[in-house]
Image (cartoon, rainbow, N blue to C red; front, side, top):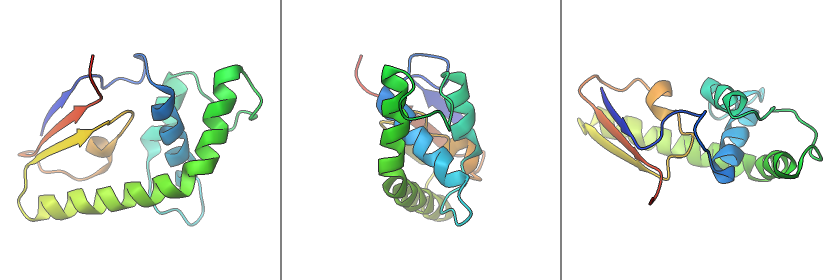
Amino acid sequence: MQFNSESCFATEVVGRTALVVAMARALETRSLQRMIDDPWAERFLAAAGVEIFAPRSVGKGRGVIVAGAHLVRNFVAVRTRFVDNYVSSAVAANIRQIVILGAGLDARVLRLPLPRTSRLTRWNGLR
């Protein structure tokens, strides 16, 4: 698999929205009846200095991340499952080029069994 990314390491500057979405995926992954399994989400959060179960009132920015993640958790879980299924179906149909827009802390390349012949490009926005 070829992998191109404008910014693929969680230790680089990460937007708050990306952290909220990663937190939502981490919360869903810990759920007993989870729709998705993303063990990377919690690792990315830790690398960015965000604790998954930090109190909502901790720090000006961190509380927003935790509160926001709880609000969007179900949406993020459904969206992630939908896109995972779509990408898996495309790969099964011999599509080998995948472009993820607004990738943020997406770990799809690590979570899905993509063929070595696939090419995944992540694009996080304009600079």
